[in-house]
Amino acid sequence: MKDTILEEVTRWILPFIYLFGIYIIFHGHLSPGGGFAGGTVIGAGFILYRIVFGKEKAQQKLKYDILVKVISIALLMYGGMKGYSFISGGSHLNWPGPPLGTPGNILSGGFLLPLNIIVGGVVGITMYFLYSLFEEGEI
Image 1 (cartoon, rainbow, N blue to C red):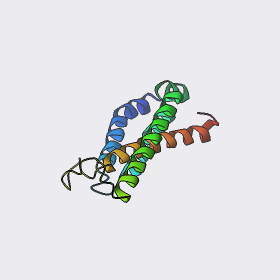
Image 2: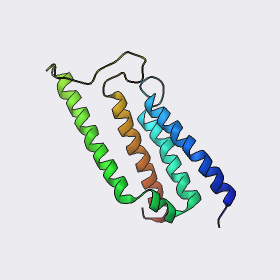
Image 3: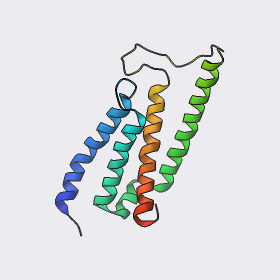
Image 4: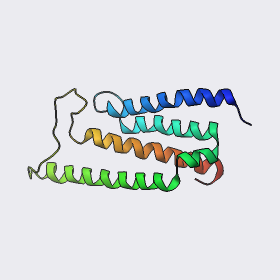
């Protein structure tokens, strides 16, 4: 059954849900939050979209093959960045690293912000995949 009011409210509120998730991810190394918390908010937005607009429309917007590629690339990037920081920082090799910036600014903390962004994407997509699997047994 199509509910026009619910669809319109969802159309208006989804950008704010995504924006709040992005805010949590970007400020995770400065305040409570981070990649996991922001990713759950974004994943909840994906799930809301699928609940309100239906499986077919969600599959058109959130294509499975593209999401799998994004999550695969993100996990490879995460492994590479974490591996590099472990090798370069833990063995005192003095290899070049990301600029640390000024403490308290968004662009501070070295790899923390990019890692939070990657984790947020992986968590959001994984939540959507798990909901899709539990809802109907398929993505």
